[in-house]
Image (cartoon, rainbow, N blue to C red; front, top):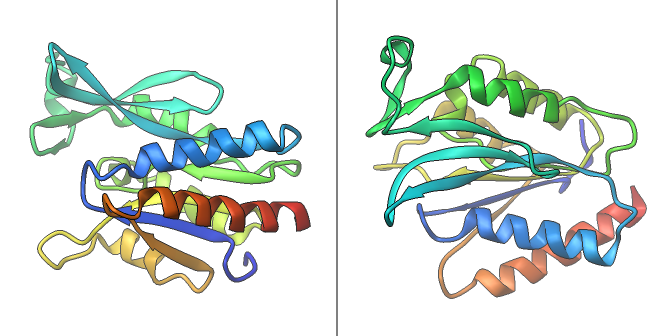
Length: 192
């Protein structure tokens, strides 16, 4: 198991800036400590004409793949699971995200944005996340807040993990949270 406090979980309501905060922490770490080896992925909205039509998964080195969409309609997509109005492309997500979760000896930090309902439709995703947690690699991840008081079981398992530190984001504390997470991660990574 990772040492206590090596799993940083950012949570908060949709649209509060969890992905933005994670990317700002990543950018600060890379610019101040270019020798850190950081791997992982984040999710990004896909917009057309100002309207959100889907999400894509993007690796930290810039490779992209679709995660979910409202605009894809094919015979294959009719069998895909849905979250709200979005059809989730599990195969596309897995092809990019799962290799990023493979634990490598020289990795200093693994970023997972996010561990949510869409990503958890992949039966291989959560076991890969748990394997990362069992390694000694620090993790920075985002998780959704419980909806209507109910948590997704896998998310609850992460939230209650003994190595997890939870950071609840809101519009008034975003900058302070970024600085707090950044400074704690730098301390851990320098000792790692």
